[in-house]
Image 1 (tube, rainbow, N blue to C red):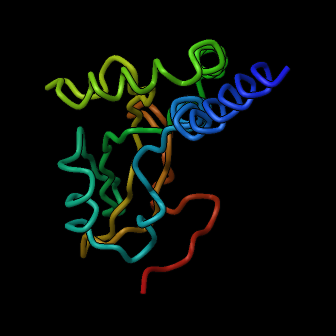
Image 2 (image 1 turned 30 degrees about the horizontal axis):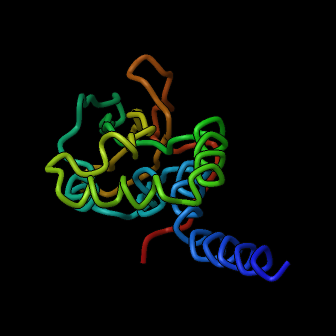
Length: 164
């Protein structure tokens, strides 16, 4: 009887020790991978500031009233991978978190760190920015294409706060 309680205590101790290790991969795969933050693009922001964050525009054009539009590429959010998270949780239970320790050691010495066990689920998308004649943002149009019909005055239908 005493031998069984000692063995159960050791198994319980291993499960408790492995719990924090196992939570890492499951939580990472069950979470949204954050992409680029577009919230800094508000009316009044300079074109240089936008291009410093997102690079040169993919395309640009002007309206007859002097508003310039630029189309930029950005990295959008990646969705959670619920199936992978469930599989990893099962692996954690089955191996008491041992597989994560092995993967951690492999990634520590691998030049392609994280490519196998942490794939990038984010995708690229386009957004448009309208500028006035002083190259200051008038409006921002998320998830746009060059075929969208933009307002001639550059103002989106929803308003945003002005830059300080």
